[in-house]
Length: 178
Image (tube, rainbow, N blue to C red; front, side, top):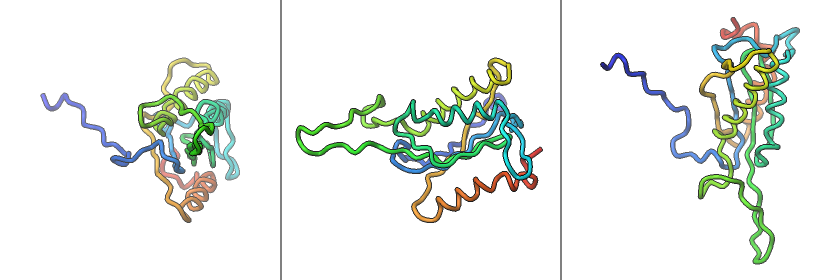
């Protein structure tokens, strides 16, 4: 009977961390089965196809849906994307009678959307747009999970940014590039 049970998934998230906090997050999302579907690398540069353009459009549409999202850095690769996404929370007025911003819909005590909700919305919206661009319906576009890292203050932001921007230059050396 134990043979029929699926293994438990290991969470990549930091236990107890509030992913709605104002932080910068490094995100990597891989295509389903790491399929090369968003374009190609030519001369060390990423050339997006229609599916890659759909991913790009969905990403840049996030702040309209989630006003607390600040898009910092972003690159689509043939089978994945990297991004640095910031979350902000409006400064609330302290003075009595001063206007304050109303929280967006969310759980009590968590008035701003958490990173997971934002990424789920992106994956769903972009999958619809990618499938439309490729003339297919209902196919999986993204792997089930995604990688995220809370960027520590200091030089880590610059290191991650450099890694992202140089990613197309290293494509031919990437073991995931099949």
